[in-house]
Image 1 (spheres, helix red, strand yellow):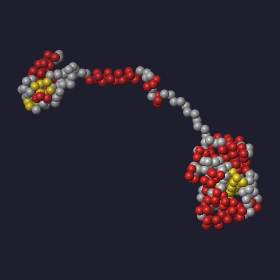
Image 2 (cartoon, helix red, strand yellow; image 1 turned 180 degrees about the vertical axis):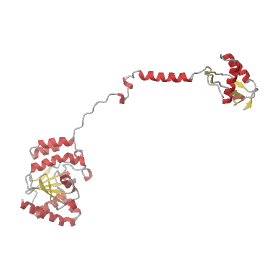
Image 3 (cartoon, rainbow, N blue to C red; image 1 turned 60 degrees about the vertical axis):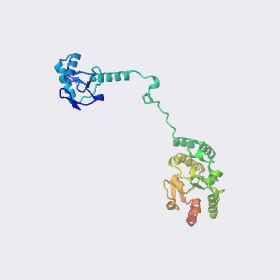
Image 4 (cartoon, rainbow, N blue to C red; image 1 turned 90 degrees about the horizontal axis):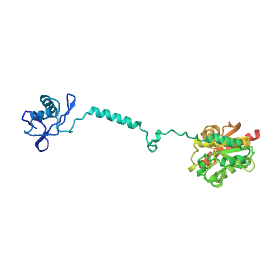
Length: 317
């Protein structure tokens, strides 16, 4: 930077020139596109030119120019005056006008369209209650339950596992959800667990072909033998209750932790086993599942005690 001929400092521009811009003077916008060469264009001469361009007198124009240079004006930004306040007002008016113009149908946002009311999804539990109530026989109940489409377990199971044994027998054994062998054979308590159950019953002079009726809390095998979800149990319980009513046993056996949870609303089979309870208006005896006994052979003694308690209960009825 160097002083001009009148002693004013200005920032240097290209080719040793200084650029001066006038913006607002007394409410008016003054612009100059002239560049000021070092030592060749003084503020005196610039003021003279501005006095010729605008209605202001020469002295006012020069004072305005000096004020702008003191503020650090460095370049010309336009050839004509610009009212920035008016531009802002015009921009707001244009935006308001564009918002008032209706958009083409293709440009209407999805959230601006009127919401289409969704149809209420069917309640699986309510439908299960209705289907179960209509069943007037075990055959009708099996058909209704096997045709129930709201339980996702059905999609991954190989077979529908309904029941085995003698309907109307004094003892109804309700086991946990089907496992791999039950799913393959389509009947409850199959495979090694079923073989052990038959031996347990024979030890107290009972048989599944004569004295007991057997089913599971669920008719389909859960994936990887996982515990049933609460929603799955909730939609199957209407069928289970109707199953008990149609089979008409005198005693229920909750065989396993899942069966206890479904019938008694409590889990912890090792704590509950051997203690008589009540469900669906019938006496219920929680017992250890044969699968558990195969893994824990030392618990067979407890299972023997429970079998003796069952035998005594049947004789007392």
